[in-house]
Amino acid sequence: MTFLRGAAHLVFGFGTFGRGVCLLAGPIQTMDVFDSSYEGFPNVRELTVLTPRPGAYIATGEWRRTPEQLRLMLDFPEEDLERRRRPNKKSD
Image 1 (spheres, helix red, strand yellow):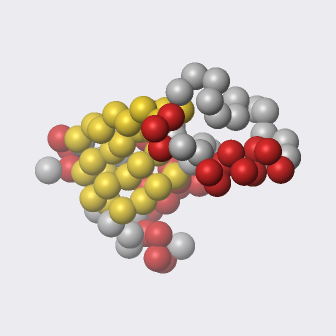
Image 2: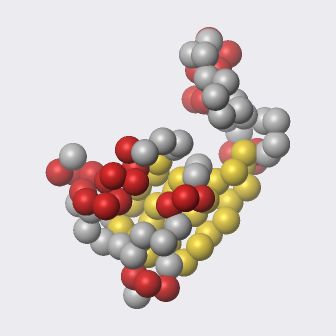
């Protein structure tokens, strides 16, 4: 946890673990997430919200840890992600 609290660049998937890290962390330069609820953390300088193309990824609540899902998670094509960068004015 000490390492994460001091990290300048972070990436988080779905869930609450990343939010907890943000609450405990010092200044974060960049953070890439798959969940727009991370907006508004004053210690995050630049947030990038990643959104898979509709139907291209595993739907929320459908995770079954099948070999196909594991392969998709590891090899998901970058071109199937929409990126929205959001500078956080509060951290400047």
